[in-house]
Image 1 (tube, rainbow, N blue to C red):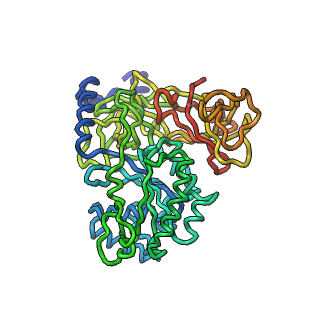
Image 2 (cartoon, rainbow, N blue to C red):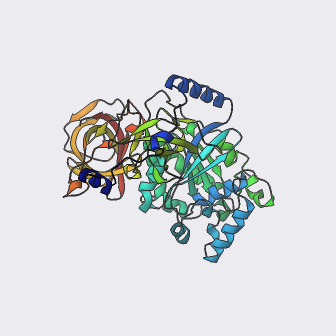
Image 3 (tube, helix red, strand yellow):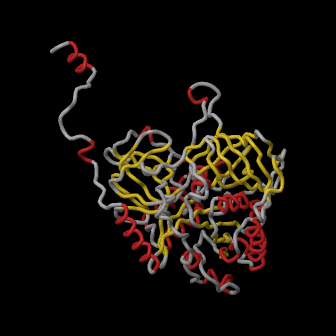
Length: 491
């Protein structure tokens, strides 16, 4: 053996016999046009059957969000008796017995010990006419980034409020999460909300208290941009399961004395999913990355446009890497799917890619129709109720899908009329609360020195091209200060 052959052998560079990854890659089963035809037929048949929708659960910390969903899953038969008893015993053991229903969604040790939701939990439930993906978002203000990430994947929202004396006021007044969560989900495109007025059993099912809570919320919902026809209210007692599925039993006589409206499940059964844009280019922002079976890596998220099928090769942006879809799974389906379309919350299992190239916030798209990468872009924003005005050069945190990056509002281009959109003032010096404005936003470097000192562009798209990929939220100092839409990518 010559020296060159020895060197190659030592470096383990010689070709090996046996099957390669390419030999095992699944094949695309349908051409794009055929796939679109099949997807359209499926969506049309869904119109007459069980429609799919995703629902984010929002509200102030300790309003009973996870408890309500855990109890609802049990009432609908999604949690068996064995699991229920196991959760009761385990929660009693650590002195958290009142949180046993929440344990169905709060699965980590830290969440269970602290008694709060910290990350977004995914579950699925079915009503007579709807197949609903549940996104249980955290209520604590320390985990607002996680809540935003969950809300970006939702079609509708379920707001849970604590009606007990003083607790509703604590969540609704300035600094509480009830207001901020409503503003956030509306800014992220959610236009339907069901309000569950919880813990009414703690105020003896008082009709006056229920109506008082509803009146305060109705005014704020309209102010936040929710149309009254797209909002509904329901009184519930989550811990005891009152008015979730039905109102049977003697313990609900006080409620039945004055309420004869729909149950929570009745309202969820009438949610209207938005139109799915399956003809658009594929956009799949990655919400989570995890190790799958064998050689596959799992990535979960919501398809924000287009359609994807098993065997398809996808580009990962930012970066130059590609991956192949080995399989597609959904919480609401028992069997793997051959394809999934816009609006679906799914997990893609990818092969032919090093997992190091897959990260939360990256976007999967077709190699023939890439999403733009931007480090500077213009946006139209609405400024919220802020105390410190926004100046040119203000450092902020930019939220887009599951990504949050440091940025600066580098230029204040114009103040706009909120009704007509016309320019009322060019090159303003400051933006104050309630202002509508056109601004330029620049992504800032993550670090001040080293390889990360150069700003990394992010995958983002004008709102006119893709509504989901064109929405942004801006936070500063732990407070959401504005929301808006991307107008143009500058560079």
